[in-house]
Amino acid sequence: MPIRKRTALPLVFAALALSACTFEAGSTVSGDRLDKAAADALEGELGWRPEVDCGGDDVIASEGKEVDCVVTDPESGDDYDAVVTFTGVEDDQWNIEVSMPDWQPQQETQEAGDEAADQGGSAGAIPAADLAAAAADALEAQVGSRPEIDCGEVDILPEEGRTVYCTLIDAGAEYETTVTFTGVDGDQWGIDVQVASEPK
Image: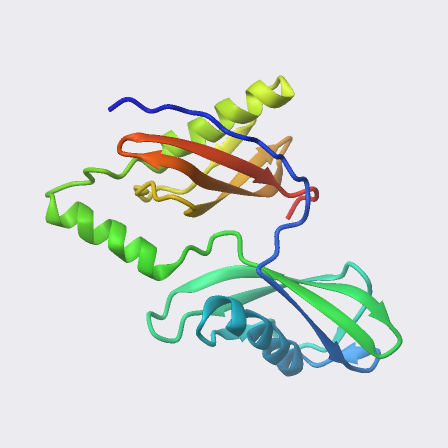
């Protein structure tokens, strides 16, 4: 299967975030309130309301503070790691950004799995390792050194505009990376790669 690797490579080194919302609070935020705020922020983006657990401890809202959380799909029971970052903290006003590096739309994942099952294998899909290699090739051509990219282990069906969440590993630090399919035409496809400016 010929694979044409090409990329516009905008390489926008900006923090990747699914959503951001503004809330009012005092100098500390309860764990329950942070859970609700993160769920509110994600609900509009995901199209369904997730369950969020950021721990039960109160959190001091300070610029750039990150809180590790777990997001659960109440329908499937699947858990996803998430990071809630406080931004724009001023007096009793604060913003949050919620990032979920490993999340992929459930419908897309299911459709890819169904197609593979119908055809007795992963016909049309590509191994995640091949996509990681393509992303590494593209970045190597751009920056002159070859990074280590991990896109998981599930076969991926190339679809125009589909985004796969991967991880770039550099000197032990991990950076959120998105790889988006472009110009998909049969077994031909290109990719755009974006890497977060700060490690996880």
